[in-house]
Length: 444
View 1 (cartoon, rainbow, N blue to C red):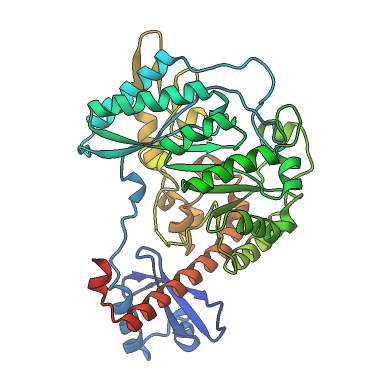
View 2 (view 1 turned 180 degrees about the horizontal axis):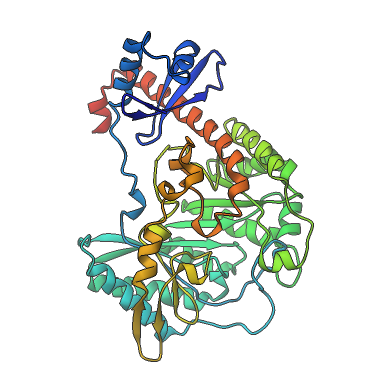
């Protein structure tokens, strides 16, 4: 609803049913009110409570509006396919891994990609000396399957970036089943490692066997424990299927015991590609997932684990673009030179250009880049009245129809996130009071 030119939403307050939260999405701001004022706002009967309403809106507007184009900030990310091979045979993987002829990116083509990428960044209006860029090794295949190419690309990127006074930041999505000899290199050069690891031994071995069908738990655990002990930023990603949907708390306990303080993201299984063709009965009912995930969010607060999901942000950072893939867009380079805005969705709709490796040329599809840039949540009719529209940003643009059924669960968990944000806000207020810290001092 719009009140005194401010867009606000009335949400439930988990700690007290006699009170409500007022959420202003464009400001990422949340305030607590009583049920009577909430009823007046909901019924449009605000004249008798005009002073209270004005005071509320004035309080909300002390928080400046956020930059809804935040996903445009910074340089586009670079993702490079190094091969199409994998050392695992996960039962829910969409890709045809482990069979057929393995192909590898050529070193001379990696050189061309890196030269073109850094030159592109250098010529952007936003270029500044010593700015950072992110280089990720796409999760369309396992990047550590080609360790020599991985090492070559990282070292070459560092050297080439120096000429343009750019600092590359390396991020590694991995299944954790790499050889022990690669650990030291990862620890030395990578800033963030996102590990697909389903935790509990029996679940991990069932979900994610090695490509020779042997159990993977021991190898992955040993590797990620070494990374964890090194202090590298480590994020765990857990896929939720019918085999582990009722054991999310036990999964949190596993990470709390072995990797205390870590972030763990739970993602609902989405069957596509090979996993769909195999007709494996591993899908999860949407309502069941929503219920168990909310319970896991609450359970996680009792532990050292930061529980996350793929939709919704605890920080209440509003954004109009679902991700930077459409906003910037990012570069995801296939083995044959096609450039896609997204490292997961490699379709014609997401194709923004291509490298001609024979002619040593870079080409862009400027028309498609403009189309992707216009795909914001504000263009999505089903989102216009939703309080969470700037939190989930309408969902992935390439999977919009298939994600329509997720809206109910996304709204439910975002109510929880707004509640969590309010509690954290009040903790900061109390801390400032106890230690006599002004907001100016806190900013400094």
